[in-house]
Length: 212
Image (cartoon, rainbow, N blue to C red; front, side, top):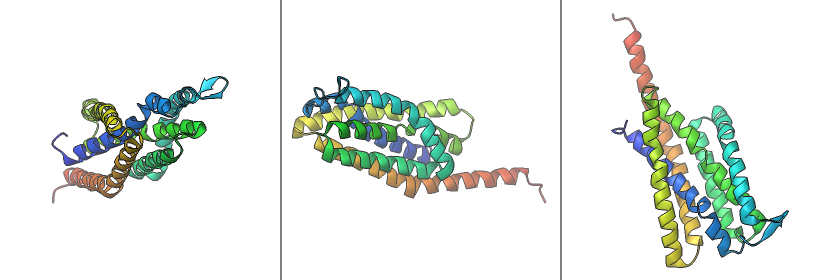
């Protein structure tokens, strides 16, 4: 598996999407503090950051069955493109409305909701391409992409904020990562996987066909 270009393309996509998502969601508290949203009470004495964290936990549970349902109807790789694009759109709008408490809550929730789909679609994609043998080991290797993204996103976000004094460049980098991932999933990964699966099916048919 690790000698296959398709695997490393998937690894790159997970890293890009998790990097973009984590640059925003992992930095919720300092972002909120920058705009005074950690002190802004929105509902029943709960601040904007408090409600955002609650919504994130709820959407963490909803995201998996929802994107699985979408995947069953649109296909795995179209769903990836849709989810990555949605995350980019949410962060792009957040760029304009981050100082508004209600929009901060909603848009950070949508960001979390969109990038959470990587934890169900990519394990399935690994199974599509490399089969059921060693599926757990294969996914375990694939899952390290999130660790790569988490290390890079926390450090990068802090360094960018330190250098620029603003969260805006952080948001733009996250948008760029998501758009790149969406483009790669639709224009490259989709075709590579379809070609590989077709070749595997042809090889399987050749093995079972009677020899002339």
